[in-house]
Picture 1 (cartoon, rainbow, N blue to C red):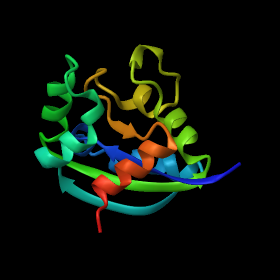
Picture 2: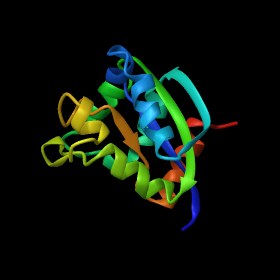
Picture 3: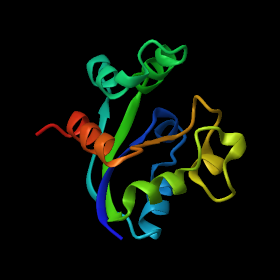
Length: 135
């Protein structure tokens, strides 16, 4: 097992529905430590940098529109195999395939309004943490 850090974004619907504490508690109850956290309104520049690999796909504009529609929470979580564990806690993008107890099964409204984003690999975690937490 390897200690890792990963980026998580709590999307606008989480804040709008007062679910921040509930979602954060799931990560903390699973031995993931919040290393950094901030609330912000995602700019178009940040959103485009974050979703650059999706540019040109039919859903790209929806991603950008949604993540910039309201305040989000960006956080860095740390723990053993954090990337894999966070993604398992979140559940799959397709909420019809999400298992009971996952964040998306509990709280996602649709595949587009799906509560959370988490990095999918070490390289993307590093790239995404640098986008959202430029110091």
